[in-house]
Length: 390
Image (tube, rainbow, N blue to C red):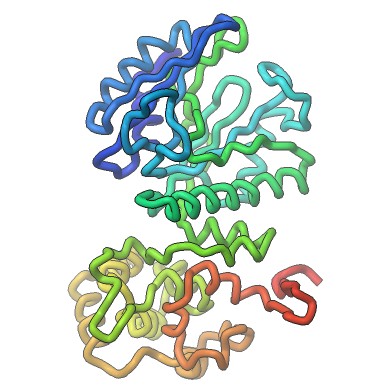
């Protein structure tokens, strides 16, 4: 069943929050010798892109490039080198043998994939592609690619996160999932048709009632996931962008500001403060604010986190932030353990390295996260995983 609404949903996931760039709509007729063709649409013309998808869907496979292009290529459908904005991470789960060339070990059913996904960070959307599932994670901070360094970092992080998912699929079920992490990956457009079988199969999003959609995925989560199977993956250079920090806020007259994302990644108490904001005690809430206020964009982030509390008040939160800004230096680790009473400090690997969790704010979030679990033993050139089962 064709659906323009689902086509638009697909394209809007790719476009994300972008105000510029081009969607690449590619299609291929059913005949074996048919060639792939591509047409480009500015983000502002997304409705026209959906119209074309609907026009083509009855007779052709219709795809969209998973990343936005900075300009229209002189030839071809666009490659990694042309992508300037990436708002999603995707993985294809081929199911069974129909419509697939290689004889790999695959899930027997789509329900098998659904059960496996419950063990991963929750995807934003799942699309039945006819002979498998396309799993889509939206990113809370899209990759904005302005240099070759940005491109390498974005491509590597997508690759590392997908390696994490593929690793767990292989270890637990023996599934061999295809590598589909490139920034210019073709993905099917929702609401169209898969013509690899007769009759054609609909390409359609799973309804919300069929699975629990997760929140947008952060780059810190992607790095932490990759580090759980390969600690060295988290040591690759990555930009520290903070919790949606504005570039103009990253420097002060005293030097670089700490980043709240890094503190949350490395400090068990601040992780608790962010994750359990809805049930924090007043002393815990205030202590977290005291630590967060020197960070980039702190007031905005404190409001965002605090709003999870049922009795949240903008005025009260602003008053707490103002007092913290005027008050003494950020809470120390000793104060959090003894006065706030947080027992997670006793096993913290950073205890003694910093007087306050604020010190973690100057580390890349990936390194702060890895330091909570792994110790590097130089003599053996190896990591000791303190979180592994004995």
